[in-house]
Length: 28
Image (cartoon, rainbow, N blue to C red):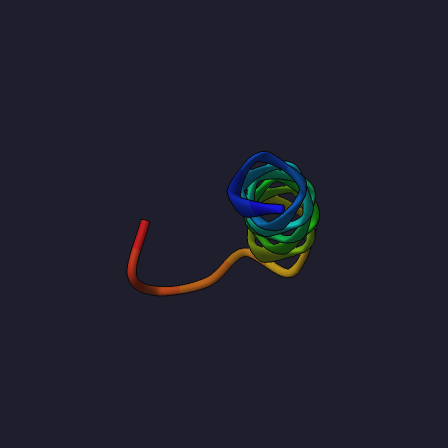
C-alpha cells in the first residue's frame, strides 16, 4: 500500500507543478 501512496503523491506533485507553471507563481 506504500507504493500506491507514493504514486498518488507523485501525481499530485506533478499536477501542482504544472498548475504553478501555468499560473506564473512568484516562487519559481
